[in-house]
Structures are given as structure tokens and as C-alpha cells.
Length: 598
Ligand SMILES: Nc1ncnc2c1ncn2[C@@H]1O[C@H](COP(=O)(O)OP(=O)(O)OP(=O)(O)O)[C@@H](O)[C@H]1O
Image 1 (cartoon, rainbow, N blue to C red):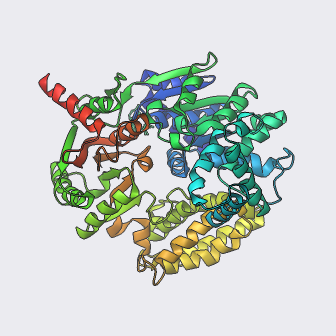
Image 2 (image 1 turned 135 degrees about the vertical axis):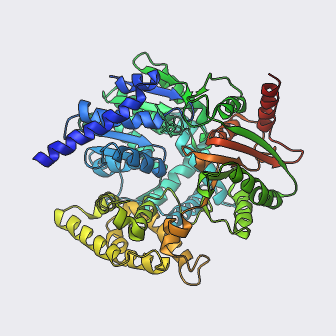
Image 3 (image 1 turned 45 degrees about the vertical axis):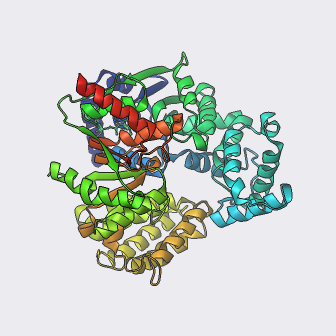
């Protein structure tokens, strides 16, 4: 059909145009031209994600032919959304041929749900994802039956999760030998979950790995569907994915394209090991490419970031002329007093220096959500709108359901006019989200109609959020929920959020435009934990509370500090209580003093 041909041509043109930008950078170009297993190891702002997006579009157009496709695994649902947006700009839409999502969702949707029975995983029929309530109940029962006595089962939650993530292979002696007590607790906990017909997040990659290990044909089945596997943020994806990659790519024959940065590995506590990426890059059958230019930050920030890292990686700013600055701010008093100084003095001064910037270009990053509470209080007192990305955010930012609802809210607040987002995208994303409930053409059509009718009626940012949520819940979420057990925990999070914004809840009175962050709410200061700032960029960054209490010496703390530091394009401010800077702040200060002397 002529329309298909012309759209194929424009898609081709889009990625070829993107490729033009990579030509000036030899490393990016080499990655774009790679023909076999390829690993890109590169620092912050070096264009890893940009290169990956262009390469994905090219491989789909040139290397893989329909109906085969490509799977792209990223760190979390926010990263997946970012990648989807970048790919959409290159004419690539996720769907049947293209998987984009987390390790968990890859494990669940591509391995566990379709193959649980044939791979003999011993799971209940219609297995669902455990909600927090189910997890807590299972842990309490398992604790009682294995450890018993006085004590708090909640305290075992983290070590249990860590043990299960570290010991992926249950057939290895280490599973039981390392800690017989933890192995017994884990097995009892999992049995309790199974009795409720559910698995939890730690189960997903482990079960997928077990399925692949026990069934060689499964690797071949995945190869038939996805001859290429793309991995973003490899350093943070943990042992289970690494073991899956070894099997799928180096045994079953799937081609690998992975990007990552050892220095930005900040999920050691969750089982990630930067060494795995290093090992991968040292293989003879893998082409390893390094990128040295930083397109995000100015020269002064790039140089100081390497001092923050304690290593000279020979990174340079792509544009030598970009003016940037590094400030060390000594503040008095407790965190609330320090936050007031930041909000009332440092922030206005910084914005005065850059007339083209406003709150939306600025982020305040901190190590713990309770520190963020103090910044939030100071900003609220000053009447500055904020958006939070940490454990205290209004709803889990990584929830796919909540992200989709956010998109729907954008459509209702003028998006329907501007095409940002387009309804077709909402419909397609909703279809993927509720895939388990939508298995026939008639159902898909009915879902699209129902969604359009519900949103069309409510195209008004002034609508009360609670009324909008009630309507969307009744028209769309509720009818789908029962048939989508893999959304159990997301629906629990949605219900909790709806209660918070309902009449009498702590956030009652919110409007739809406030939820969507548009109109009067479009210019908000970002408050984020250092962990959640990963992959993002802001013109001005305040790294708040960089003191020896919150960021003491240690390799993982250093990398966390480095990740926060490298989010900044034009100004980075390191704030700490007078007299107690973090050791990393002292190193940056020494670097700045030495640079001044030169
Ligand atoms: N070749 C290039 N030409 C122009 N701009 C580029 C180029 N490569 C990257 N950029 C820009 O640099 C910025 C950082 O790119 P990107 O987000 O892909 O980096 P990254 O390596 O994934 O960063 P991080 O690891 O810190 O998340 C983006 O604004 C991107 O558009």
C-alpha cells in the first residue's frame, strides 16, 4: 500500500538523519556501524542512549526482518518510557516486533507467562504479581515457620531480597551452603506466595533464568522472535540478567548490543555488580567501544566530576566553550534551615544568573527522602511548585499504570489539540498494559472506544482529579483489572493514590492539570533522590546535604555522588553543613583550588 511505503521511507529518513549527528563522533559512529556483539562503555552525557536509539532504529530497518524483532531491556519503566519517546521520534513504535521494558517485565511477559507450563516452572495457573499486602503476609508466615520466636519479620525483608537476588542458581551448592537459614526462609516465603497464586519481583528474573537453564529450546524460541537483544544501563541490571545474557547471546546465538558505565553503578545493594559489565567487555567475541566526549556538561563540570570520581577518565566536554560552574555552599543549622537558605537565597541567585532558565530547569538532589521532606517544606513555604521523585512521591513514578494515566491526563489537558500525546499512542500503550485482558480484536476495539469516550468527556484541566480518576477507574481500570493479575501491585498503588487525592485525603482538591503538570503547574522545581536522578539532566543542580553523615567515604557512595554531580549542564552546587563536608566535596574543593592556581 502506498501509505506503508511512504511511512517506511520517512522512518528510514528519520534514523538516517539521527545517524548524521553521530558521524562527527568516531566512537558513536563505530557503535552505529557494529555488526556483531557490541558493548559501549562510556561516561555520563556521552550519548549512550542517543547512540542506542539510533542503532535500534537502524537494526530494525536493516538487520531484522518482519515478523522477527528486537528486545530492548532498560533499568526501569521511566528509562523505558524515555527510550520509547526517543524511538518514537525515529519512527519506531513498540509493539509486536519490539519489546521495550525492564528485566522484570521481559522475564514475565516473554518467558514466564508464555512458557511457564512448557518450561515446567511449577507455577500456579494464571499466576499473578504479589501485592505489598500479599508479600508482607507471606513473609510473616514464613518467618513464623522457619525462624520463629520474638523478632520483626519486616527486618528480614531486605536481607531476604538480597539473598534471593544474589543466589540466582538454585541448583548450585552455594544456595543452601551460604546461609541455610536464609535459604529456608526464602523457600518458605516463596511457597506462601505460590499458595496465593502469585510470584514477586525477585522471582521474575530468577524464574526466567531457571527456565532458560533447564530448557535449551527456550533460548532458540527467543532467538526466533528476537535475534537481537539490546541492553541499556547494563551495570545496574544484576546477576540474573547477566546470566541470561550469557546463555541467550553466547550460547543460543542472539546478537547483543549493550551500553553502560561502570562508574554509574549505584544499585550494589540490590544485587548489581559493575564487574559483570567489565567481564562482558573483555570477551574476545565482543567489540568494546569507549566514548570520551560529554555533550551534557560544560568544561569545568566535566573536569570536576572526574575529581569527584577520584579517577581521570580523560573525559572532555564536547563543546569547549560551554560555560559552567561549580559552587561549594556551606550552610548553617539543621537540614530545614539549610533548605530554607537554598530555596530563599541560592536558588533565586542562580536563576538571576540565567535569565533563560526557570524552576523546571533546576533539580535539588539528596540522599534520602526524609531530607527531601525538608526541601519540600522550604519550597512550599516559599510558594514554589515542586515535583518529587523519591520514596515520598505522590505515586510510584516507575508504575506503568500511573505513567499511562499521566499520559491520559496530558491528553485531556490540551494534548488532544496539540497531539502531545496522540490518542493512538494512549490506545496502543493501554493495549500493551492490559494485554492479558485484551486477546481479541473485538475487545481491543471496545477498549479503544471506551477509553476515547471516557477521556473525550473530560477534556478540561480544571476537573477535580478525584472525579477524573473515579471515571477512568470505572470505565477502564476496573473492567481490565480482574483479567490482568500481572498488574495486581500496580492497581494497589493506583488505589492508594486515588485515596490520597479523594475528599478527606491528604491531597484532596488537586486538579487534573496539577497532576499532569501543565498550565500553572508546568514550571516546577524537581526534588529527587540521587538514585532517581539517574539518566536525567538539568541546567542547574543542587546536590543538597553533601555532608559526612549522608555521604561518607565508600565506593558506592562515591558513585552515587558522581551520578548526582553529572546530571548538571551549567551549574552544580554542593551544599553541606558548615564544618562537615563529605570527603568527596573536599576532593572537588581541592581540585578547584588546584585548577585556580594553574
Ligand atoms: N553526537 C551528538 N551530537 C549532539 N548532541 C549529542 C550527541 N550525542 C549526545 N548528545 C546529547 O548529549 C546529551 C546526553 O546524551 P544521552 O542522554 O544519550 O547520554 P548518556 O550517555 O545516556 O548519559 P547518562 O549516562 O548520563 O545518562 C543529550 O542531550 C544528547 O542529545
